[in-house]
Length: 149
Image (cartoon, rainbow, N blue to C red):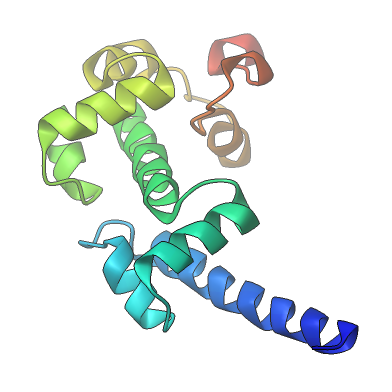
């Protein structure tokens, strides 16, 4: 292929990957797996995983779990749902797996997070709470809501 043809193919591939990412963003609470995402993109699961990671820095499964944990953090800060209810509301089917992944990404278990942050967002603009409440894999690069007060 020539350079313009290579570039055009890369752009088409990236558009497909963005559609996969958008589907994950929309359907995070639904049962999703890499195989079904790959079928929707007309790729093998392995190829999708490699291409997705190359484009976005993490695998489709990792991206899905990050979205679920991000939404769980928001629901836990509200304080009106139990950890179990939040687990199932964000599409997780196992409380143990959810708690493990939550602790891995956030640094505390869901119950502790809920206790620590139940009142933390009161009075702050939504845009600030969304940004500050995102799970961060590299803790040194982030900040917490308490630092905003």
